[in-house]
Length: 143
Image 1 (tube, rainbow, N blue to C red):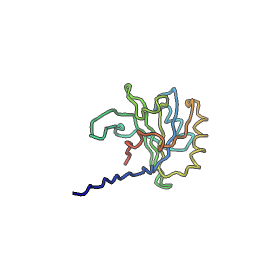
Image 2: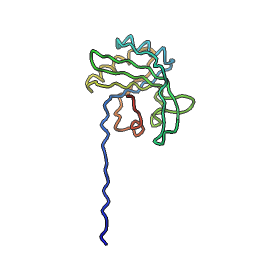
Image 3: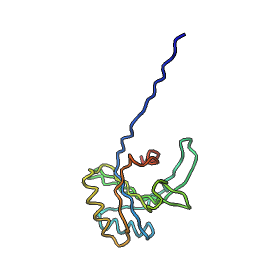
Image 4: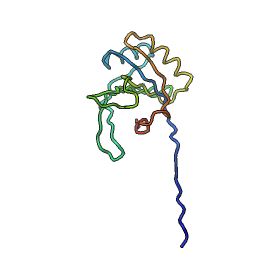
């Protein structure tokens, strides 16, 4: 009897979005108003909150979600509140209040967006983040 070989398949996640962490002392609707003005967007409250479930499909938490789809430039924007009733969307970053996810943007444009967000009086800090470095982002599915 021969020994069977064990093969392990590992897949690298290739995230299709860029991510910015935002610290703000204002409510989400006030922050969205400022973001819309400074970035010339039309973020609006989604019909449903962003629901977080584990790999087994068990409900973990839900978070306020704003979205905008720029069909002309093939870009999608999602602003999600990180903390809701003591539960975090991305628990590795508990000090960040909101995450802005952008699909279809070049990394170079991320710096320009970050600089514009820093101009808002309701924004305390802005952090461009690499989704590859944050383990819990592999559970985020927007589409």
